[in-house]
Image (cartoon, rainbow, N blue to C red; front, top):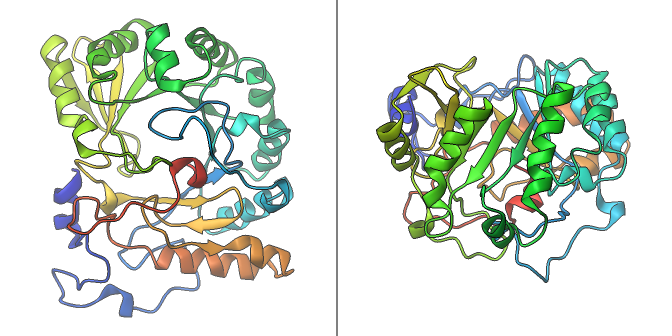
Amino acid sequence: MKGNDVRTAVGLSVRPYRVDANTGLDPRTTTMPTSGPLVDAYGRVHSDLRISVTDRCNLRCVYCMPEEGMTFLNRAELLSFEEITRVASVARDLGVTSVRLTGGEPLVRRGLVDLVAMISALGFDDIALTTNGIRLAESAEQLKAAGLTRVNISCDSLRPERFASIRRRGELSKVLGAMDAAEAVGLTPLKINVVLLRGDNDDEIVDFAEFARTTGRVVRFIEFMPLDAQGDWERERLVPGREVFATINERWPLQALEGPSHVAPAERYRFADGAGEIGLISSVSEPFCGTCNRLRLTAEGSVRNCLFSDDEMSVRDVLRRGEGDDGVAGLLRRAVWAKFPGHAINEVGFLAPRRSMSMIGG
């Protein structure tokens, strides 16, 4: 169940601070719990922490950053590995079971293997990494040994010239090599993230589906979201997940798969003949806010409860004031409790976040 169906089922509106459709009450009048899991005012339990380790990137993808002119954080503004690990430790004690390291491009942060080892020692069920793959091959074995569980690799075209056009830097051959390297050391299941742009790479939908079939890698098609630094997002360039499904299903029939958790962002489908799997992440056309379990920590230590909200709370300030773990836990609870019922992208008057994806962390 996705999008409006989910929100209807749980009695949510995408508009912030509106009353519950079933009870007629504002859920936020309920007292925030001070014990138990990280739960918001709408009953969603948060067990997934996305940690951005840097806002820098070695590529300049057209849907994310301008080719020139980006301003990045100073090193002193970034959370140290020790600070990141402390936040992760408190989050684990509050019921977070999985961590994903993001950026920017996380592998441009020096010493990332050390951070993986520090987080791994905390005992999370799953530690994943989202990367553009340019630097992955050289560190895949070390990352696996440090405790990394799996990786997602971004790849928006299987044609070298088009790849170069979309990414502006880097080479497709390196990214394909990174996929091989990840599989060789056991960073699996390997997922390939494809952002589709109307008129740029939407004619490769079937090509990527065939790639999934022949390699066994899970290809996930992601809708273009209003999170680009240059503010050029246009709905007309978005390729809806339903269109992707129809295109592939016409060629190779698909069957819905139930994931291990109903909170996963992707709708999963297997090819009816058993030759692989694809995923659809339809954040814009079919929002899954009603089951969202994700919390984000930006590179400079701001806690965000939604990609599309500008509300942030600085855990860095809490840490550098010398507060104890109770102070960190209290901030995480407040951040989650303040979460809106939905991101409202499809509502009149929606404004894109002031900070882009590379500044937030995916």
